[in-house]
Structure formats: structure tokens, C-alpha cells
Image (cartoon, rainbow, N blue to C red; front, side, top):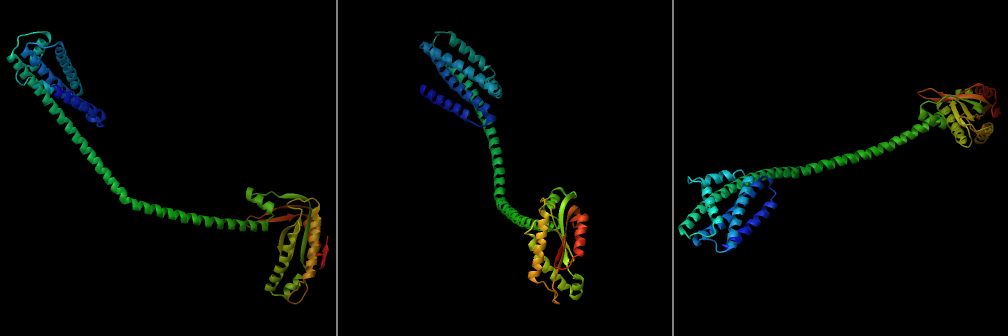
Length: 389
């Protein structure tokens, strides 16, 4: 009995560990009830053996055996109550089993227990011992039925769990297959999208460079139409107020006898002549603090002292430019196809004037005032290779 009890106790301990490590939360209560029934059967078996000894020998041989019997009875009752709490299926099956013979087997067993626990010595009776053994065997059979029913419940729930897990596994496998099949398409799409983005980025860089070049060209064109400081203010504020300048120097120049020259030469020859002459004049403007206002027909207008005020230096700047232009014409010997020498008329005047942006489609930086008109008239009354100031 000791040998088998040891093995059964080890098995019960293993069941405790298995229940603790189980991740199946839905069946853990039934597992605990099953374990309690196994424990109950173990202690009922020992109780049956000790009770048989009591009736065959007329009492327990020692006090320790008596205590051992009582301990088994108490453990049985405690574990059975726990099993009933963990599973509602335990008590109905047990009650059906103990009343199947027509008598209340539990009441019979309890009378035997009362006699064993409260009688120290009795007459030895093999018949009574046999009766005790048979009733306890029926008791064990009922507990075995409970154990089998609980095992069936556990197996049923495990089957449901397995089926659900298999279903989930199948769904996961299908998703995995779909993902694997879609990977090439996704990779191709991402690669194509990346390639398109890269091409777009390259095109955007080129367009940005082209836009920057065009902006630079537009700025250069704007700087040719209006002074740079005025153009910068125009780009920032979209509006530039007219200004009054107390003292500026204005210079007009044209080709002496241009009307007669234009009659003698073809339009292409006139254009080439003006292009060569104005190119030379434009190159010399960079050496002086002056601003080219406009060039219309053969007339060339320059001003100094605006839009940036330079104190009283504007007169000297324009005068030196005029001398440089006269020297240029004399040294280079500009001639027409008819071998007529080109001479310049120059008029210079210093005085106050107004300046501002005129026009919206092609804005121009224009000067207004008597100083402008006087410089123009002085140029008109001048003669070739001479300057009037």
C-alpha cells in the first residue's frame, strides 16, 4: 500500500504542476476538479484499506494508524468539497452513483465511519469487514465515473480548442501565403514608385535650376530697365514711390547729323552702326558712378546722383564720362558706309528732378523736371565733338 500510495502522490504532484503551467484558461477549473477527484480516490482507497483492518482485527493496532485514518477521511471531504466548487458536474454525478442501488450509500458509509472513529475496540468480524470493503468499492466506482466524465469534458474542450487553433493556423497560413505571393508585386511596386520619385526629383532639380536661370535672366532684364536698388525694392514691395532729388547731373548725347546719315544708309547699316557705338558706350559706363536711363533712336540718356545719392560727385562723374566718350569717338574713328565720320553732341545739366517707375507691362525708371529738359535742349543746340554744360 505504501508503494502504490507513493506513486499516486507523485502523479498528483505532477498534475498540480501541469495545471499551473497550462495556458488554457477555459479548462483550468475542470482540470483542478479532475485533480481533486484523483486525490479523493487515492485517500478513499487508503481509507478502505485501513477500515478493513479495523473490522478484521477489531480495532487499529496503534494510535498513529487511527490518526492516519482520520486524516484520510478529512482530506477526502475537503478535496471533494473543492471539486464540487470547481465543477458543477461533480455533485450530480456523485449523487446519482451513490443512490443507484436504491439505498443512500453516503449514509451507509458515514455510519461505518462514525463507528470506526468513535470505537476504540470491537469484535473482529470478517463479514463486517467485507461489507465495509464492498460499500467503499461502490463509493470508489462512483468517483471513477466522475473522473471519467470530467476527463470526457476536458477532452471535448481540448478538441474544441485544437479545432479553433487549427482554424487560426489555417487562416494564418493563408495570410502568409498571400503575403509571400504579394511580396514580389509589392517589391516591384515600391521599386517602380521609388524610381518614379527619383526621376521626379531629378526633373525637379533640373526645373529648379532652369527656374533659377530664368529668374536670373529676368532680374538682369529688370536691372536693365530700372536701377538695381529700385528693382530690389520693386521685387519686395511691388510698389516704389516717386522720389525727389535735390541735385543730380543729367547727360544727353546723340549722333550729329543722324537724320542725314539715316537717309544715306540702309536700316541694317544704321542698326549695326548704333549697336557698335552703344556697345562701346555701355562698356565705359561701368567705370563711372552713373545710371543709363534710356537709349531711344540715336539719343543716349545718362544720369548720376540717383537713385543712390552720392553727394556732389555726380557732376564730376558725368563730366568725366562725357570727355571719355568724345575721346572714344575721336580715337576709334566711327564711320558710316559712306565714309562719313561719326560725331557726338553732348548736353549736360545739373539740378533737381523727380524720378519714379512708370508703366506696368514694361516699367521704366523715368526722370522729370526742368533739369532734364534743359540738358536735352543743350544737347540739341550743341555741335559735333563738343559738349555743352
